[in-house]
Length: 83
Image (cartoon, rainbow, N blue to C red; front, top):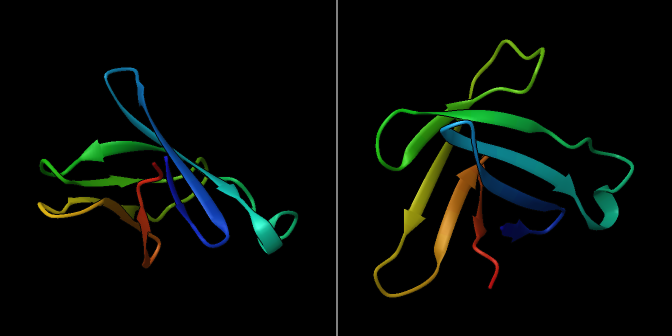
């Protein structure tokens, strides 16, 4: 799980791939909707996915820093991996 202000992001194994599900938190509860994306690998750390009914693909990048935490980059923001 990754978490940033206003959003909790779950990444799980799903049918041989990965699935990303967002959950609004804090002041965004009731304002933003949850999203679910089945991810398609572009390379070892870069994936794309789109919510049902969306025509545009969203990029998702996983970053593991050698000296610190892991991050998920999605929707223009970075989210650290929750401990």
